[in-house]
Each structure stands twice: as C-alpha cells, then as structure tokens.
Amino acid sequence: MIGWGTGARWALVVAAAFVVQIGLVTQIRVFGVVPDTLVVLSVCAGLSGGPQRGAVVGFWLGILFDLPRPMHPLGISALAYLVVAALAGVAQAVVLQSGRLMSIVIVAACSVFGVLVFAVESAMFGGHAFANPQFGTILLTTALVGAVLARPGLRLAGWADGPDVRSVAK
Amino acid sequence: MLGSPRRRPRTTVAILILATFTLMTANAKDVPVLKSVRSGVIDAFGPIGRGFRTATKPIRSWWGGATDYDRLESENARLRNEVGRLRAKQQANADAVSELARLKEQEGIGFVGTIDSVLAQVATGPYSSFDDNRIQIDHGSRSGLTVGMPVVTSGGLVGILSSVTPGRAIVQLVTDPDLHVSVKLAASGNYAIGHGNGPSRPFVVDDGVELAARVDVGESVVTSGLGSARFPADIPVGVVRKVSRGGADLSQVLDVDLAADLVRLDYVRVLKWRERS
Image 1: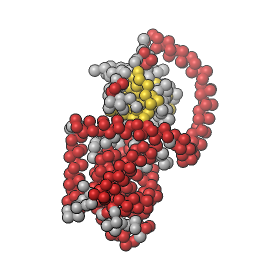
Image 2 (image 1 turned 120 degrees about the horizontal axis):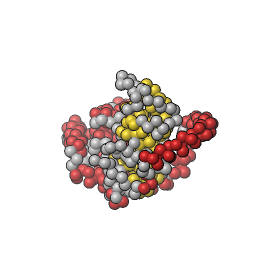
Image 3 (image 1 turned 90 degrees about the vertical axis):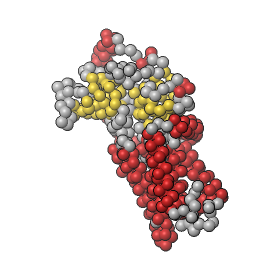
Image 4 (image 1 turned 60 degrees about the horizontal axis):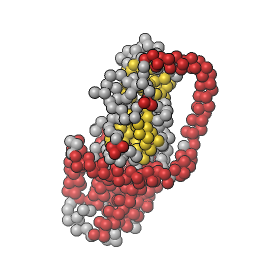
C-alpha cells in the first residue's frame, strides 16, 4: 500500500494546484487564453510516478476542476486528465533514459493531447470547443505552458512521490 | 487512494474511467447530491476567485498591455477610424434617434429601468479557455435570482443566468452559440433570431431577415420582447456591422457588433424578469 506521507503530499499538491488554477491562473491570460496548468501537473504525475499514479492524480485534479464548472458534465476533465496522465506514465521509461529535453517535449505534447481529448469529449456532449476561434492558440499556449512548467512540475511531482520513487526529475 | 503497487495499472485506469462515466451519467440525470456538491464548491471558491481577481488587478492590467500590444494597437487604429465615421453619421442619426424615441412612445414599449434588478459584481471570469462564454457573479438565489433572468450592463445585453447557487450565479454570455435571442432591427422593424458566435466574434442574426428587407450597416439591434422571448423588449444588443446573403435559405445574415463590452466586465445588472411561458 502507498504510504500516508505520499498520500498527504499529493493531496496537498492537488489542492494547492486547484486553488492556484482557479484563483490565480484564470486571472492572467497568455495570448488571450487561460493556461491549463492542471493538465500539465497530471502529465507530470504520470511521468514521475507511472501510469497508475498519473491516472489517480489526473482523476482527482479533473474532478476538482469540473466541480465549479456546471456548464460541463462532471467527470469530463477527469477523464481527459487521467487518460493523458496514464499515457504519460507509459512514456516514463523513455524519459528516464533520454533526459531533460525529452521530458519537456513529452510534457508539452501530452498536455496538448489532454486538451484535445477534452475538446473531443466536449463536442460529444454538444459543446463548441472545436468552433472556438482561438482553438489553435489554446493548443499552442498549452504546449508553451507545458514546456515552461515541465521541470518545476516534475520536481513537484517527484517531491510528492517521495524518496522511494525514482522520479524523472531527479 | 493513490494506487496500490499490487494492482495492475490497467485495472486502476479502467476503474477510474468507469468512475468518470458513472459521474457523467449521474450528472446527466441531474442527481441532486451532485448538484448540491457543485453548488457548494462554487459558493466556497467564489470568494477565493474574487479575492485573487481584486489582488491581481494591477498585474492583469500590466500583463494585458504587455501580451496584447499588437491587438491594442490595431484596435486603437480601428477606433480612430470609427470615431471619424461616427462623427460624420452623428448628424444623420440625430433625426433617426428622435424618430425611434417617438416610435417607442407610440408602441408603448416598456423601459428596462422599470424592471426590478440587482447590481452584481463579476466574481471571476472563465476558469478555462473552453468556458469563455460564461462568467460568475457574486449574487445568487439569496438575492432572489433564478435561472433564466436577463443580465445587462449600461451598454446592453450581456446574457442570461444559466445556473444559480445560494451565493453565486453563472451567466451564459450572449457570445454563446447556444443562446438564441429574439431581436428586432430598431429602424426597419424587422424581427429575427440571432445567436452568439464565440468570444471576440460578432453576434450573428441569421434567421428571419428576408432578402427583400432593407438593412443598413450601423442599424441598431435590440431584443424583441416578442411572445415567449427570453428577454424583455428593447435591450440593446448591438449595431449591424455587415450584411450578407445567407446560404440556401433566402435570408440575409447580419454580423452585429455587441453593444456591451464583454471583455472588461466588472459590474452587471440582473433583471428580475421572468421568461413568459
């Protein structure tokens, strides 16, 4: 079983990331769009702790993010984040062998993929994500934010995972 | 639960995917517990969002100028041209305005000012780029607000309340493609249906303006207040920017610049007006 310490650290990270996203990040737009830092953290959790850890962290981050947004079905972000975090976890071995640059590329690419998954789900529920005139900008901004936050995100995930996990940030 | 090492990752992922599908299904069925939880979270985090919004206002102003310089420059140029054009039209419009005022008196159209209303502050903007057609305000059912009430500024129509909690309400902005508004062209008197077209895009009136109808660029568009309309009559929606021919249906399509500035919303007024059944 996972230790209480790791669980507590991840709970703290997830709660803090959620508050920062809805409180601070939403106030500052990059190229006119709101950066999604939670998808980046989900990917980092997968890369750092593997697919299982990534899926669980992505699930909770997504649930929290869905709660104050009644215009979207509850669970839509959770599904996108957990899928993309689990996929990032599969790439963990590649990153461990390749180094920093590859980890940044993978975080950016997986973050963009997470936004695409959300857009597909939203469209299935009648949303207009693909019709958003800034859709291309959203993807580019997500890639940029993913690349910039990859290292701090992986360090944060490595700290939350604890010393027993061989994190890609270490 | 952060994942037991003894359980296969695929099993955990499958369980979590099933959990999300269950939540989505429960959400679609309007399970009261989920609504209460969401409502509680919106109320609990509303003050946090508002606090951050207030605290970061100087940073946002600076950041907005720094990252949006090109857009602001082109907008300034566009506005300078617009001022010149409007000055030229001002004289011509004066007659039309007085004529419209007389017309309103004759039709007995009610003023929005007579409707009971609540002044509300924008608590937070959209939480993600896919929520751009929604804002949250700092009043809810405790202030007597209910779903469906119109939201305006002194400029014009902003949207409609789509969700209400005890302390907060979420406004579906007029830019939302799903929000259809029954409108009237102020000068020609044509009635039509319009809808949003996404943020930073003009409102589109694409149903009801026949090819034979004369519509001029610059003509005002207001809410119609007809029949089962969702808005009271005569709330300004915007001004016609472009008139074009529609596709297969023999009608005109109007691009309308919104009257209300949705980019810099701080305060809005919620009209305690109910949709007629």
